[in-house]
Image 1 (cartoon, chains in turn yellow, red):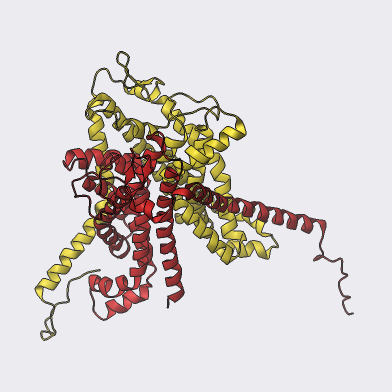
Image 2 (tube, one colour):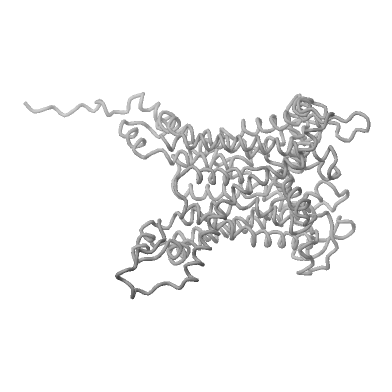
Length: 311
Length: 304
């Protein structure tokens, strides 16, 4: 769209807008462009500032990146034997996320299929509102629920010594990531053209046959993206896992072991690490790692979604 | 030679194959329905259980009073006001940027590689973990910009964190204005911005408002980003004082207060953390419900 006025040779008498109005509009449009680009700027700034605080530790001789990634020894405040190995934390994140996905993916995709294919419009509206409210519950409230209600429930039903563990965190995270999976999954199913459904119905297929023979294969990429975004949400979640998974930095042997995740570790220790200390910098390095993980997950999800659009 | 009518056991009869097919359909519907219902249940159970345990403390007095006896008794006023400050300030920063960014993405951007990058950046900004936002706020605002641990740092961190919410919902609102409206406006000689200002924004303002409301609820519930940038465990505030904080002060926040009560303070009155959780959850759900109600109301009134 060009904003240049046509050459005004014949229409000299046509009223012109005052110069300030034209200039003002130009300035405003520049501002709009700038705001549009702000997201790029902010993502870059987040990476830059988090890495900037972490960077000095990377060049230290005592620090080894291999140890940071693959050692299970995390003794940040030990007097004689300081170790910064995050492997146990990574396993903690993975175990809680995996359990959460094991619960949330079937339920989330099932609910998405129900919403988009099986239920009446009124029921759909009600369910969508409920899911929206479910996704609005703050993570600290989920954490509180895990710490009190869920932990008591787990202690009484399984007889575990402590109620804050992998199982607790997994259930809470599943409840938190289900709304993402449902809403993105439903969008993916909605994006399948109606002509596919009509063709199936005309051949005498039931709704269920339609779902598993036509819609699930057709919406495969979108559903995969929904799952990936759920994973992204679960990996990045902080307060809920901080309160619901307990505080043991070790590789869990069972569902009823306490663990600590990468995110919870930062939240738990950042307050005690003096600014500029090695401990502080290692926590920022963990943050950089988390940023890169979620960045990769979100990027993959977007490419997967774009795959279906192009087809 | 007239055709005899088809016998009733013809090809449209209910064969066992059809019966099996319909059974599978009924089972699938039931299973998926149960899965959907399994999501409604936790919401009701959680809210119900929390309210039940919070009941002894729930009163207006609880919101207006200050914490007493080493935070083991009393109310939540300083935290409540602190959250209002943080949310208000973060809105002031992020709403204009977010709305203008959405205007750019929906009205100006063309489908080229650069805008693809912008789009990816918005998605990634939404996906950055809240604790990483906290680290960013600490590194950028508290230390690099020298704002210190303050309401300002915390609100700016929150603003960047909630930016994708307002961008996404504003974009949706703008996209719902029919293209013909814009074309009509261009045809009478209006420039792109005049069209946006006179036609697009007035027709989408309510959708934008819904987005702002959603942003309020998101910002109010966040804990990690404010925990390390400006929120503190305790701050002395007069009971019912509306303006207790200055921009460079530290403040209490409702979400962090809940975390503190639940994990850091020993011997808290039993119902106190539950009541705090109910006030936080109640405010957030109320704000969200009003956004939903507004949306439903406006959709009913829509003329195109």
